[in-house]
Every structure is written in C-alpha cells, then in structure tokens.
Figure 1 (cartoon, rainbow, N blue to C red):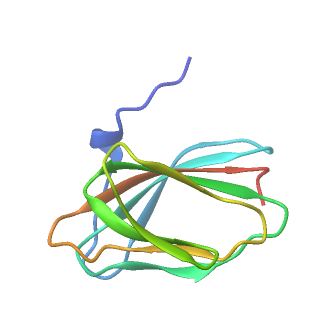
Figure 2: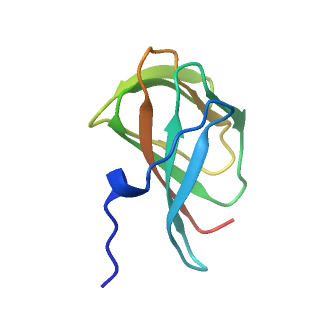
Length: 105
C-alpha cells in the first residue's frame, strides 16, 4: 500500500500556487495545492469531471459557480462538472488544500 505524509511533500513558492500530485490513475487524481498569502487558482471549469476541495490548513475564498465562500481547515466543497471554480488565499497565512478530481480529465 502506498502512503504519503502530506507535510513532507508540501511545497510553497513566492511566484505561484504549487500543485503537488499525490496519486494519479486513469480514473482520478489527488493533489495538494499550496498557496501563499495572496495567491490564486484562477477560475476555470472542467466538463465531465467533478472536483473536491478539502481544506487541510488555513483558510481561503472558494468560488463554485456563482457562489463564493470562505472555507477553513476541516471544511470540504465540491465543484460539479461544468461549474466554474477557483480559490484565492486572502489571509496572511499559508493555505493547504487536498484536491480530488474524477474522472481524470
């Protein structure tokens, strides 16, 4: 069985949000997104794939469709197929988010 300690693989960059792939198959992927204060995942959409965001540390402003909500550690949300979605770290702390997408785009 493969296992990963997220704290050992997370990485941050002053230039842009970092995506660290944890697992990937033909059917899904699981990443951890690492955002410094002020960093953004620009709103975008995926046709035919659903995305889950689970906040591990920090807090961020998440957009799914027309709604935007601040989520903090221990909170999860889903962006269904075709819905525009993105995240911004407006806080002064780092934001660490576990992300799943299926099926794999």
